[in-house]
Image (spheres, rainbow, N blue to C red):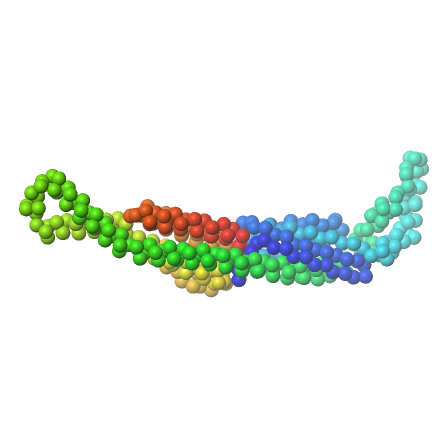
Length: 318
């Protein structure tokens, strides 16, 4: 399954003590990087949420935002008589030393009462609420990643098909390229021989001239032989299609690919794709260096542009 590293998921859970909301936002990253933004009261929830994300994700920069609000009954319960009496005693003791100490505001009293030890904050209740909200948000988050990954995979498959068409066109043009070169070579040899010696054709036989042309054509064909590069590009396209369909493949240096089980192999699909595009770009460069015509040069440039598009799209795949 191809998953994007860019996604969003949110959920909330409620109980008699209040409401808790959680959000997941992610962008692409080489590694898994999880950052939390949450109140100090909820720091105890960071560990379980981080563990859930670590089990579900391989890469990506994930921002986690957790907020909560207590019900009014919980706040009233927190400001009980004992708490208020304790504050009054502390204020009295402070004024015995510093007479002009101001009385605390109501908001300060509520904030002071809102800790994990007060009756309005039961750790077990808020932990259960966080687990419920995190599971729901993670489900939405994963669904968004899969939908975006599917769109990315479809776009990449279209680019791969375009690469395949270019490879087919280049391969079909090779025989014509050799034939044109042979005709040009025959004309050049004839013109050169006539310029050097107008009576040269009386001193050289047809078979000798044909053998010379065949020799030069053979050398040219060796110099522009790109059959191996085209075969490797086709192999890489097949491997790309396999990876985008959710499988895995191993690439050897000779360009062959062999499907393998996805489990038990290190790395992620995004990293495998990046390596694959490096290999494809190497073949396109070699194709350009061996180009025997302007059409092949243009084909090599088009290949490199398509491969770069694939590389940019793969940057967002986990």
